[in-house]
Image (cartoon, rainbow, N blue to C red; front, side, top):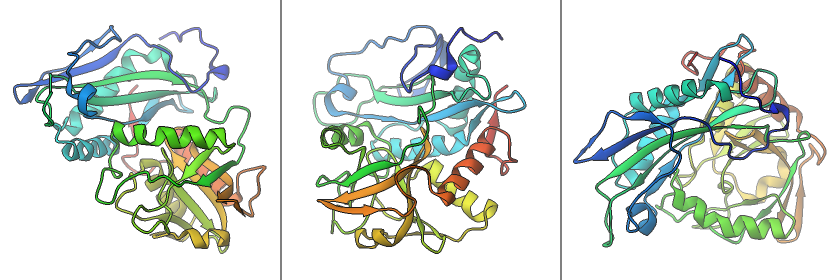
Length: 341
C-alpha cells in the first residue's frame, strides 16, 4: 500500500486523524461483533457514566515497520491483560484478550498507509480505550459500554536528540493506598494534571511521586515507571502495589538480565538512597527510556553521575537493545513481536 504524503521526520508527538477506528459496544450483558468505522466522532447521553463519574480506562502501544519490512506491534497481549485488570477494578466488562489483539491488528492493517517507514524515527501510536455510555445519575457502574481503538502516526519522543530531564519530588500524591494507582484509569491522569502543570511552571520536566503512606519511597511519575542503575551496575526498579505495571519496564528488566547479563532487582527504593544511584530513567511506551539527570528534593539537588548532557551508558545499552528488538534488528524473545503484515 502506498504511504500517505506525510513528512515523517518532522512529525511531533500529537494526534493526526487516520481513516479507520475499531468500535465494539457492550449492551444487555454482551459485546457485539465490533467493526471498523470511518467516523471519529462519539455521540452519547449528557448523563453518560464516563461524563458523570469518570468510568473510563485506556491503553497505549505502538506499531512499527521493522528492518525487514513487516508491520508489527510489541507485546499487545500484555496490554490486553492490563486492560482486563483495569476493567475489573472499575466494575467494567472485560473486553476479551483475543478480541483486543484482533482489534489492534484490524485497526493497524486498515491504516497501513499511516504506518511510518523503517528508519524514519516515527511510529504508529495505538490508543485502545473503554468507557461507560448509558445515563448514570446515581453513583453506580454503567450498564452499557463502548470499546474503541484508534491510531495516529507520531514522531520520536526525543525531537532533536535525548536530553536528560530535571524532575522534582512532588508534594502531591499520585495514588491513594489501596486505590487505583496500579490500573490505567483516566481518573489517575486527571489527578496528575495540576501537578505536572505546576512542575513545568517551576522549570521541571516531571514529578517524582512518593508513596502516600510514608512519603519516603519512590513510586513513579504521572505517566512512567522509574528505573535506576546503581554504581555497581545493578538495574533496580521500585516495587509498590500502587505503581502501574509498565510493559516497557518489565521488558527492560528482562533485557537487562537475559541480553546484557546484568543483575536486576525489583524492591522498595527509598528517596534517601537516590544519591547513591549512578543512572535514572523514566520508562514507558512513548520514549522507551527518558534519562533523568537531576532530581530536586525541595531545593536539595541530587545529580546523577551520568550527567545532564547524555543518556547513561547502561541506560543507553538497555534502550538500544529493546528498540533493536522492537524494530527487528535483534532477535526477540518468543511471543514479544506480533506480526500484522
